Length: 442
Image (tube, rainbow, N blue to C red; front, side, top):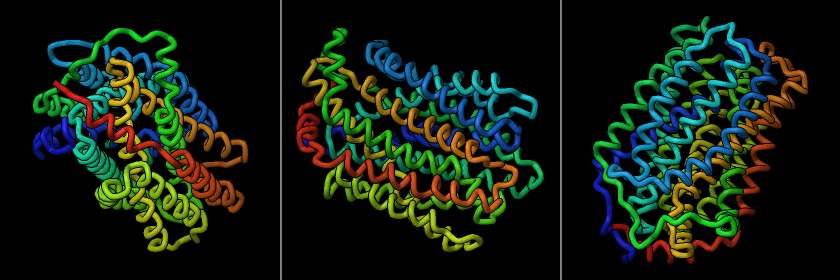
């Protein structure tokens, strides 16, 4: 198939499909940014224990992703490969969301561990099935960039929408630190099944032609995951997620404790970042069209590193200066999901041409796994370090907490962002794009 817009999706159908991305990112933001602080602060569980729970459950859940990806690729039903898995994720996420977000004081660590694992299982199912389905919507590299840009814009809308609720609730119930999470949980329990139903009703699933579904031998799996582009993308995705994850894990503590803002203002700063991401998505999509997706990812990671160092130097009580830095960082938010996943769609085509089998779900499982590992490690490492240094979340403004919080909000994330730049040096995007042109879908 020639490069072009022959298989372009109309805006209405694409919008309906991408509402699920909105739900995915809203949920991911709540779990990675607000849920650890909710259990450590509002529910009074030990901060180091909360960090350990998030880290270890992520690692355990990580082992399931390749199995899920392989099962999705092997699935053949009259509804498609990925649609049944997407539908099955809804009840799992709804049940675990209720348990995690409506929890009250008195729950223990076993409760958190069990429901986190169930939640991450459901999250794996919705992310893998939706991203793999997204990658099959077009064979054109240009059209794929457009599709994943829409995916990211809706994802950003999800982050923005859910974050908009939290400052309002915090302002209405200043004495109840759990109110925002309770409200957000109800929103997610309505949003997730509604978004999935909309995608299932409006978007057909294309099946790849001229490929078999024969199982790969062990040596083929080794060859699949030892491909240079796969290794580079997985490491880049791991590092960019570590960068944002470490900063997000301590953001509320830093804004409220060291910069002196109340909870409503701190939540508003996070909202500003995701509002700026609306501009960042078309900006990086346009940049990717001019210089390539790999170089655009490098440019975004380098800019992010500089801005993260600026965040570490923020003086207390200067809202507009902090908001400007936060907004500039928000422009870089899309690079963490949009560009690596758009690049992996091209790799999936090259893999299909090489092995004669479709492993799109399995390849996206590697990215989902790297993202999970990074965010779990980010929360775990950040909280364990805070606990080791004697950090007390009830007294986050203590001057003794300034250095560890500034290191974790800026210097460590910048180090990871610079690692992304190194990972993507001389990335063979041209050869991946050529494979993408040759892919043919029924």
